[in-house]
Image (cartoon, rainbow, N blue to C red; front, side):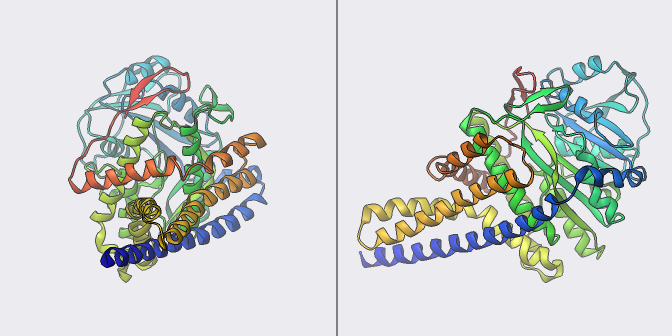
Length: 474
């Protein structure tokens, strides 16, 4: 019995110290994000957009839209991209062997005919079947290929891309008209030193969408969707802003990101065997920058907004979260030599260990904290004190920072301008530690287990789309 008590006390101290370290890390990130957003808030964004218009002409962009079973949302996505306020773009929709009518609806909607397009096959890919070009929008192309996964579809797009910069957009995503201008701005201002930049991602569920544009912002009536909105705010506005400030970014969302084509090809293109191809690409680029002493940067830009559809059921959300975590572990393991390796500078000494200890292994330790709290209450005695202390830390981590992220977004960007929406999100965060947080922890641990046993599957995601018509996607 004595050994059990000692083990409980030691375990309690370990979890307590770990959670304290996590809270300290998030506190630093929150302060850095606040300072960055305070500076951005004082700027006139439209004036800045206009100031760089001439420079944007020198940096035309190819927009890549990999699409697999995206019949429901792809038309709204293409409309939003055709409406972008950017001087020179070409738009490639890459149909990755869809089993639904993705290609058919694009061909019909945009009056497409078969055409030839120059290609520079520097990256090995699955065979391309057909190429189409729109007679309405000459800069819009459709490339049909054999199914090979999202990474393979992006590699096909890179081979066909005309311009030296490319932007990746998911087939169910919608961009604000100024988003591409703003995500390209750090690349323009750095004269190409920034080789990749990622934009902010917001959830479109419940919004009004007309012709590829979000006409009004409304908060979804589903608690699961609202909690995902809060999660996105916490991840994008706190974590990525802080890491970007010191060139420590290891992931920019594949739903909306811009890359310089040359370093991506030099790094071997997108990995076609991993689940998390977006993180894998960023980690590969960071590794290449340090190993080849190229001195480039990868940045996150908080202002440009990409709207994407979020899961609306528990089963789909579970598949998504375990897939994300599985991809995280795969990328970290593939580049494990970077961990605490001074050769890779701050990325190796700070960023990679942070993702290992807090993002990857954190769910295991935090879930153990929940189990410990329940066990401690049953055992009674001195363990009540440990349990109460851990509950306070869990609430501080899971609730206070979520509420802080909501207030930060409302103050700086104002995506949800109505005060009752802000209050509703804050009230839901008070319940997060009771139901939503434990569920996501279990799913992320499940992703770790699947990765260890090499169980790889993408998992279907039911789409509702901008029109409210259901469909299936991946």
